[in-house]
Structure formats: C-alpha cells, structure tokens
Image (cartoon, rainbow, N blue to C red):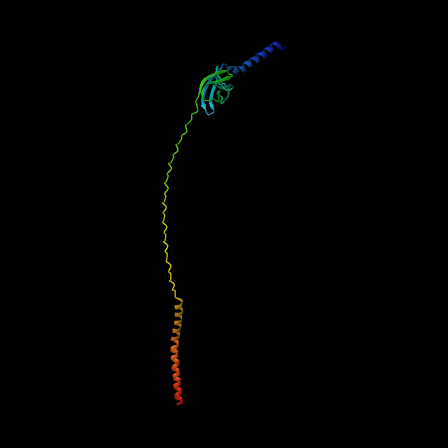
Length: 221
C-alpha cells in the first residue's frame, strides 16, 4: 500500500518553495542598495535662468537610478531660496535636467534625490546681463547757409515836371471908332459904291440915247 504523506511535511515543503521563489524574485530588487551618487554635468546660466543637468547612480552597484525623484534649488547667501524645481528624466542613463530661475549673483546649487537618497551642493555664479552700450551717432548738424537778401535799391525816377507854358493871351486892342466918324465912314462908302456903279451906267444910258436920237433924225431926213 502506498504511504500517505503527512500534512506537516507537505506544509514544510510548500513554505520552502515559496521562500526560494521569494528570494529569487527579490534578488534583483535588493541589488540596488546604498545612497545616491550625484554628478552635476551642467550648471550654467541660460536664457531663462540656470540650466542644470545631473546624473544619479546607486552607490552599491553603480547602476543608473532611472526612477529617482530629483529636485534642484538655488540657495542665496542668507540661506533662503525659491521653491525647488522638479528635474525631469531625459534618458535611461539616470540623467535629469531643468531650468532654475535666478537673478545675477552668487548662489548655491542644491540637488536633492529621493530613492536613492542623496544631497549635493555646489556654488553657482550667475553673471549680470551684458548690456551693449547703444552706439549714439552724433547728429550731423549742417550749418544753415544764410543767403543775404539781395536788396535792389529802389530806382526813384524824378518826376518830370513839364513847366506849364503860359501863353499870354493875345489881346486884340479894341478899335474904338468914334461914333461920328463911323457913321460918316459908312455913308462915304455907300456913296462911293453908288457913284462907281451909277456913273458908268449913266454914261452907257446917255450913249444909247444919243445913238437912238441920231437914228431917228436920219430916218426923218
């Protein structure tokens, strides 16, 4: 007849198998042990502040800490500083990067890592922005050329004054004929006119009468 295994020995065998499996499964996880090895690869001033890139490894085996929580912080000389900035993983080699806002001055970069634990501090100098002096080109002032106004002297033409020609009035002296002489003179002119006409006319008429009388006498005889 086959033997039936006792319950106690079966339980011991199951526990042993589970333990072996647990040890095998936990082996790789327990291989990452120790603290964080933090290496600052870059911490320089950039356009938005200080560009930070760090690398984190396990101290026991030197493997890259790809699932670590990493923050960066700039601490002033008095120990104060803004809120830490979470650095993001940029590859599978344990590198983390980010930009930390900062003003010009001397700061202390503090990198804090959780799982594996670790803290690193190092000084960082943030320079003042270089201000390029504006090149001021002196304004070229062209002196104003003042052209003297050409003043043409006014030509004053003397008024030609035509001397008034005063024509002396020709005064015809009035011939004053005495009343008596004038009357006589007029009568004399008339008589002269009558004589100058009447005498020749009388001579002609007298001659004609003489001729007619002579003819009559010749006829009568």
